[in-house]
Structure formats: structure tokens, C-alpha cells
Image (cartoon, rainbow, N blue to C red; front, side, top):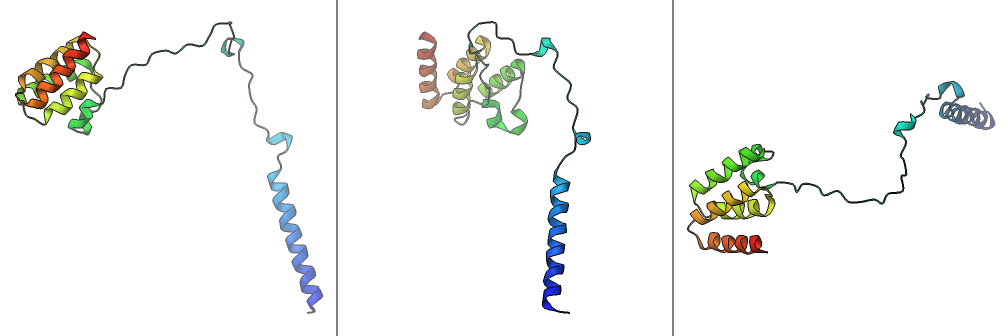
Length: 138
């Protein structure tokens, strides 16, 4: 076998590979995915009104500090948890209660946090209670 014959075979093989690659990448009209048009009721309508921000409920994250199972709780469960923390009265609950006061928006939860902080007899609790009182006066 001569070198010219080997080069010719390599060129033919490379050409076939390139042509095969290009034809496999092209889609024909038969391969098109059908798309149904949107109904007019689903079209975005410009009624001339201005865009406005919709306030989002703040995310309540303080229960997750007590464990992964405490992450998502309804209002009543969080209220029970605040009352349970008030019974503990340990220094480690003060930062959790402080965060709870900042994140909670319901008056019942906020009042329970204030009562729990008042039940704790630690300087950090008194400071957090004063900050809570100042925030409620503002």
C-alpha cells in the first residue's frame, strides 16, 4: 500500500464523518415540534396600568434554629414554641426569641415573645426586651 492510498482513505473517512455529523444535526420539517397558539385570554395584556410591588410576607426562619424539623410551622405551632421557650428561661433562648420578635408579624406571637423575654432573667433578655419595647413604640 502506498502512502497516497492511505491518505486518500483517511480523507474519505473524515469526509464521510463530517457529512454524517452535519446531516444528523439538521432537522427536517417533519421533525419540527408542533406548538399550539396561546388563547387570547392567556396573552399578556397591557391595560395601561403601572407596575407595582406586591408586599411579600416575611420569611419566618427563627424556628429552624431549633432543628431542621422546626423549619416550617404554622402560626399556632410557633406560638406554642415561643411559650415553651419561655418556660426554659435559659440564656441560649434569648437570641432565638430576639430573632422571633423581629420576624413575627402577628400580635399574638409578638406579645408571647415579649412575655418570654420578660420571663428570662438574663441581661441579654432585658436588653432585647428594651429594644422590642422601643420598636413597638416607633
